[in-house]
Image (cartoon, rainbow, N blue to C red):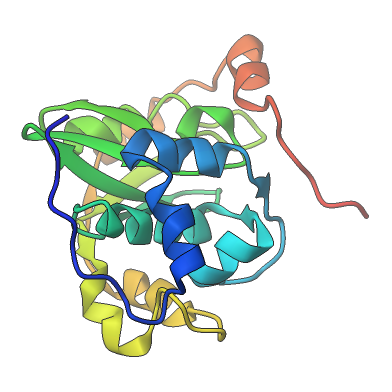
Length: 210
């Protein structure tokens, strides 16, 4: 991976926070950081600063954290939204190295986290998530994806460091167009995943206590 220029950072980050973020050493280090977090089962929308301090994140919070960290490492802060049927949606951070797409993500399902930058197009990257994207009934549920959203559009709202929930980002994702991955006929013909695939995808899966 070619060295990247250090970019100007949000002045609200403290020196200690910046040291931690810079120590992650690029996309692989950012993914390792997310892998080590406890998956967040609460209905929160924490900014990257509060993910850093609470050490927990769900997919939306993890994607925003990754986008912020990528920016500090010289990449654009880009996220992509996935829509699903009979399932929860998913958000990932995306980046390009040598013209190829990769991603950083956290999830309660082991098969829909990050991807190495080996994909020639965004659609190719998204399709790599298809087989691992299923609900507890074993249905393959991924259906659409958004264009990359550059998070700099939310800089005035302090999306990286604000103490208030950043629901305004999630609300924006509901308003933008998404590209279908399947035709209606293809979706109707999908088989459910087998038991071994389901078991593999649920490694480390957390559920709320009743």
